[in-house]
Length: 99
Image (cartoon, rainbow, N blue to C red; front, side, top):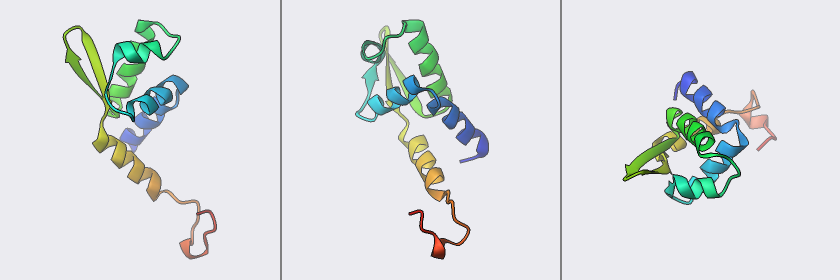
């Protein structure tokens, strides 16, 4: 995962609504109408959030009729998890007490 990808993901997750959307999608695919019910936001605002999540690669969209169905992109999610797991706050892991 390159720096640009990580920056886009961090930006996407830097908003509480988008973070909550990702948490909801962790349970599986959701229709935009179900996501909208969970928030006190307008449909255009939800579309804005979903555009950012999709552009970051974290969320995939599937169109069915007039509805959009969103799901987590597991490949991107796992790569981001691995990137975060590779970070350390210690220079000498043998003496690290932050784990």
